[in-house]
Amino acid sequence: MTEKLYHRCGVCVQIKRGQIELSRDDHKSIWFTLIEWSNFISAVKNGDFEPEYLNKFIHKKEYLEPPHGVTEKSIKFLEISKKKIGEIVSVEGKKEGTDYWTIFKDAEGNKIVTSSFSWGYRGKGPIGLYLVLTNLGFPDAISSDVCYNKNGFKNGFKIFKQKQ
Image (cartoon, rainbow, N blue to C red; front, side):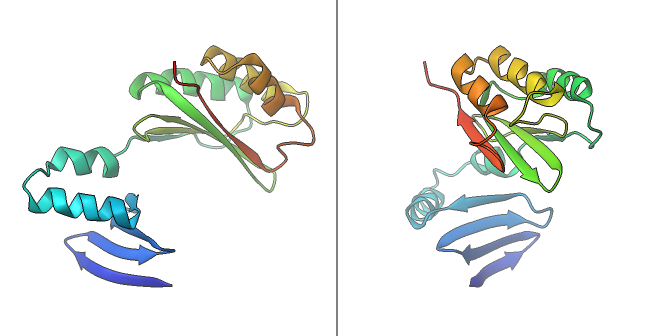
């Protein structure tokens, strides 16, 4: 059940699945738990709120690679795009039908979405993903398991870089 609380000037506040969503008309959004929302509203009321705080969450950078199925192109796209965001700290793989999407995120939620890495077998897609993950500093054992394990990650995966 969704309850719309506020909609004005392209900004919408609504409750979905027990969380509060603050979104813009271009579908960029922030999700708050009720406690986070309470802290956010308190900060606004106390004058501690700065627009930069909100912009950091809503105005995230997103680089989306058009689908093409060529691993080498995805490697090149990632190399160029990762210079535009912070250090990559998590990687998520999603399989939708025959499409493989790999989402690389930095600590601020900026992301790069590639279309030609794959996992779960031995081929160019998994080999390319393995090389990328190890070059980004993910442990060899985790990278290998994600890329080549036929049984464990059929529909996707999500890994996080260990904090040093």
